[in-house]
Length: 621
Ligand SMILES: *[C@@H]1O[C@H](CO)[C@@H](O)[C@H](O)[C@H]1NC(C)=O
Ligand SMILES: *[C@@H]1O[C@H](CO)[C@@H](O)[C@H](O)[C@H]1NC(C)=O
Ligand SMILES: *[C@@H]1O[C@H](CO)[C@@H](O)[C@H](O)[C@H]1NC(C)=O
Image (cartoon, rainbow, N blue to C red; front, side, top):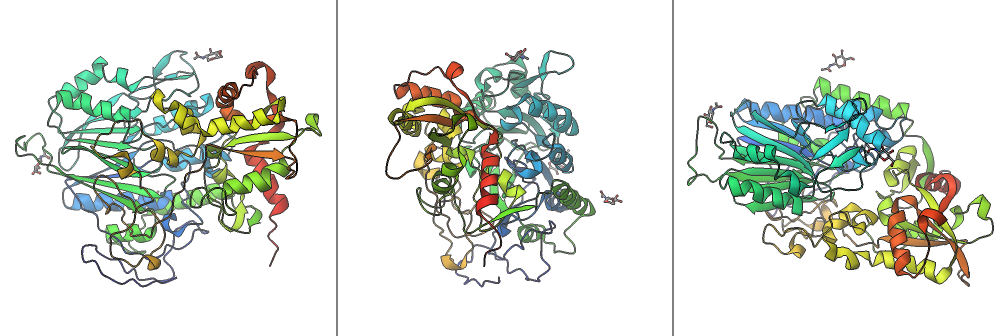
């Protein structure tokens, strides 16, 4: 696996890791990380580690070496980084901005869901933590959040704009405190922190998400930003760093505190991104699925005893996106495989291993004969996961006993698929990774084929129709995978004065590092408001192609003829979107009256795993 690199840029520090074969993540089936050139971190008086949108991936990526460290390794990393900071009198804070649930077998396959994940998660010391939208879709999820994660991180969990209906008291109460003021241990920096969720409205009615714009006018917020003893505002939240919400929070604070540094931490779009609000305010988004540990440092901040006069104050902000693997962790801590792991971190890795084995996540259901990609290839294509679903899986898997002999046209939103499939074993875990949502299917019967297929076409035109709407949760954001929203988002505040096209390039920019591309491992090549040196690991570019909002499949499929009428089948999660599109398509159907469950007890998840069991045997070759 060893690769050599031609050094042609002196500005980056290189790691030529000693590639002893024993370098490995602690999950037994995780692949060894591969040595790659690394950029150094720039430390400051105050430093942060940030995760977001982990979606249950606490075991790390078992098929991708670049992201193969687990939550236990991260526990070791955070404590080693804290030791390093404190040895020179600096601070280190650990942040998580939500969507910790749904998206991985470790979360989704337990009954009740999440019982293992919440136990593993709590082992990390997290200084500031907030809720995402996924914590609030279901009553059971938000109540579990309230009783476990909010309780486990008492004093550090912030919910500036979320209330929950208290299951015992039967009244709405704040999910967690609205804000927190504290002083850092080493530098004595006085921080005022908030924890927001974007203006989400698909939550269950047992929670209330107050609009950010109204919340920032509330008395407690107005008082908090008028507090004279604040050296740094830290706004964490589950919202894109380029969003109306963060934009408005920024201006509300700035209107009162023209000079105080502000650091935002966001997420939701599943991308790496860094935004310049002004010379003293920046925002960091740290990817998804435990692929990225965001690093942020700030220098030149005042404290109670050491005031930097406003006119001289020029705080320096630095960001890096750390690939979640042991070689990166060793490099940034200056440690090695003997000196890096802490006993606590090793225990957490063992806890993950035990949890995975209790859930039988390594049970092999079949073997994928090839890689199937969501956005790395154009759609349609033989190696597109959507083409595979549309042409191979759905046509032979759809069918309701009570509708025998009736053809079906199924509409599946592309966002229902959350991850690529890699050639090789397709496990119980893979099932949840690829399709974590518990949505079943519904249908309306006997719809003229032409109109039914027009519904799908309308759904695929949705962003064009609704982009004018200035709604932050408009359907296209829910229909397509979230990574794509960053590429179509044209509605939120253009804070840094950059053109939209300028930042879209998460995985789609070219390196300017002088490295020979073919020698590099494919991975993140981020371009953000600070340039192209954000990724700690220098990678070659991975292409990113747009996919439609929805795909359609006819069952049974017959290339030579189309039926007169079909059952219009859809994933129940998108019923309101299908109903709206049906109106545009001239279909006068009352979905609340005329629709019914299709294939009871089958979900997209079980449909895919059943197909894999039948069609992808492991015994070939
Ligand atoms: C305030 O900052 C100065 C300069 O960094 C430092 O020497 C001092 O110890 C800090 N004060 C407190 C109370 O931590
Ligand atoms: C939520 O909606 C259900 C069904 O409409 C209702 O019975 C319940 O009381 C509502 N819950 C709250 C907290 O308002
Ligand atoms: C790690 O686990 C061992 C065995 O259960 C236990 O004795 C030890 O106290 C744990 N250490 C830490 C730091 O959690």
